[in-house]
Length: 410
Image 1 (cartoon, rainbow, N blue to C red):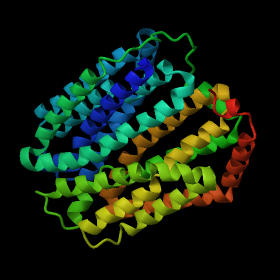
Image 2 (image 1 turned 135 degrees about the vertical axis):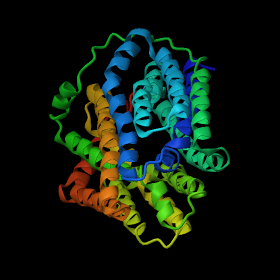
Image 3 (image 1 turned 30 degrees about the horizontal axis):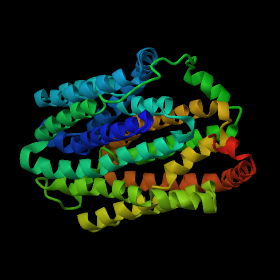
Image 4 (image 1 turned 90 degrees about the horizontal axis):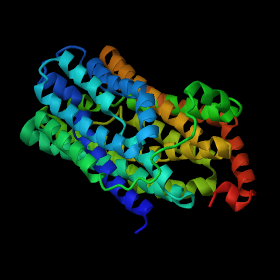
């Protein structure tokens, strides 16, 4: 077996385990705060802050870990992150108040980096003609983990409690580090000059459509992650008993991931048939309507069904946005253009849970669903009204007339 394929399989397993470990307990932070730590007021706000602070610290530490990765290779960063995240989850055993919980979340953010290190290793150790295929395969790993993680966490927490879930998450994180120890990294040092986000934004500004895409990514990510600290509490509001709320909310979390995996290939084909702009609009409109309908559900079962329906459409959004970045960016800037999209996502990860927690605590969780639906529908309207979808179609049409090796280097 070629080294690149050997690496791809091992890294897929590592990312799958890592993603499952992360989602095993994260969806249930609000219930942990209320039931185990005794937080009685503003639970939504503190849950949002706990999720956001980890992403914020992770983003601040990313340049440091990236420079070490350039110097020593991505494999040591994978092992460092897996073991460090395992220790961070184990540390939750000793958390008995809000401040110590937030401190552990800061430590978790410092140790993050398993996913970008995996993708970097694949990108730098895979022959160019196979990079697209390898990255596509890798993208399914975290999606699969996010299906099993919340469901398993909901089941396990009913038997051994959330602290038991933290222990299991820690063990799985360390297992993910062990899974990638067999990776063969040939290109340990990269001589390319690292550029700053500001420099990359200046380059991206030469193509205004790229800036629009980044703006849409931030807005959509914020609106989506506003719900992250609230879903388990909303399940309780819908009538689920708190003793079973973790299982019910775990199923609701998994429903979106399952729908995403089921329809990923379908939306890929539709992007080629309808055009990426129109596919993006359909995904945003369907996701927006799905979010608004979740305000009207009579119970947990209907809510879970609507979460699945929402996921069927929302699955079209980010693949279309990522494909548009590749389409609009010049070939020599594509790597940095994709990196900027990850920065935009990270900004959304930081702001979304924090805003969702604040709004949910002050005005009720229902308003967050209304805001999410309205933002997604507004983004769809903006894309159409600004001619973005037509520009995307024109760009795709021009690219289709390019030589094959220009559109898809081999």
